Length: 487
Image (cartoon, rainbow, N blue to C red):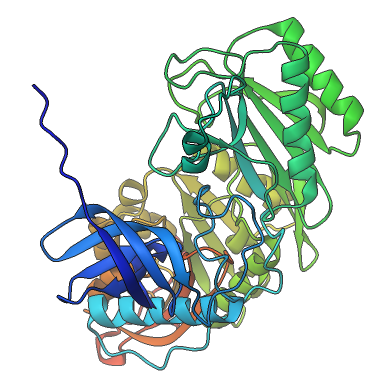
């Protein structure tokens, strides 16, 4: 006999007082229990249905907005609170920036626990709508039904959906009418593919049964006006594939690149699959200070193109290159930062885990006539070793831009032995950055901090930190270049 599920309480009239981690808001009950509430705003008074309860805190959802706080604004997207992609559309942008500034400050002070300089004011994004250059949509034959739809008692025989996964649920997809984070071309492409598939009886993918035809759609749009669409198909059906792609090309002749991939795996990742060109080019191009960067279907590129330029300028300024420095760019991706700073360095060595990204980096260097870069592929902790340093030379400056998990302890240890005179640490996760800064503090002082907002209406924030090798521990491998010799 199954255990009866405990009925959790409804808290009435909870006053929301602050913004917390993961983009949630919080309030406190009369007995001082903290309640985390997504999609609420400071100043709101809400009735909250508790969904999870622990000894010291609870997590709930807004059942009713009793009184809107002064901070709250009307969200633009009709899918807000259900989609989960934008946690903060109901907060004014300036308030979002203040929350992100505090998020960086809290993480560095609470976790790093090292001396810090004053943190510079966050750099906001000039564009807060239609700023994303990449979106990925999922097609499903069983769309997510909202609470309102379920409560209506209506029948919903057409469950085909083209949209986003519900957070924390791999098999639940919300049908999206419009997304305001990408150019309208994204909506038009997605809705066209959905309509064509329905009109031609092409089955939408069943995420549980792992069967169906139309599976995912990736859309990339650069600031140069170029665009790419990659259709992922769950079965090898050449005639149906040709019909769909021909129709897309006829409807959207402006597409720079139209590609497709057959994916019969149990996950949506296509990085390990053969992506084929239907028409146009196999890449699109982004531009930055006259440099052209080729972006293929598997390439990583910062999602906010225009704000990426601001981020890279901060990294370049923090590196303070004079023209004769030997630079390592760790986690280089497609070599965007490496190529961007190459004009001001003697040589730049980039290291990245993904081999395809390294090939893109080499192509980008060649396409821009850059001949002072070298790129190496492999797991960072396995590539960046003492032997690598001896073979390739110790750097004067090191730029690191790791994934959200931060740097492996072995990588930090190697950096400490390499003793570059200056480190520029670019992070998408201030918490793991703070952890790494604490380890680097063995030999380095933080001398500058600059938060950058890449993702308006979300809780995510980038942060750039400059570290300087303490003079008394400089063994001669710093900015004077006395031991930064290429071998």
